[in-house]
Image (cartoon, rainbow, N blue to C red):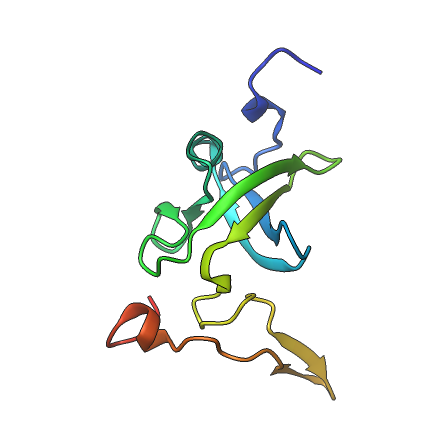
Length: 134
């Protein structure tokens, strides 16, 4: 293994991003997919919590900064091609999705359509206040 920074081992996209999968450290369930840049990955490791890059807002996004549903970081893995990150996290409150569900992967393909199969644990208004999800 090289003596360079772990950040240099990541194969960043042309936009300077890498996909990051958040997985529940206890159950193994996939919670969400987000994007990271060098700064967000470095901050995640430093702070011990998931920090992502919001492509829509073009800024760093600390998971749970508005909802309180932070992800405590337990382990970081890099895939064999160096172009995807796996974060093993403890999902505070058990809600990872802005829709109030445990996972962002709540819709299953059934009869040619994706249908929600996981319950809403908390409404968007309960999480974010009037106006709902951000």
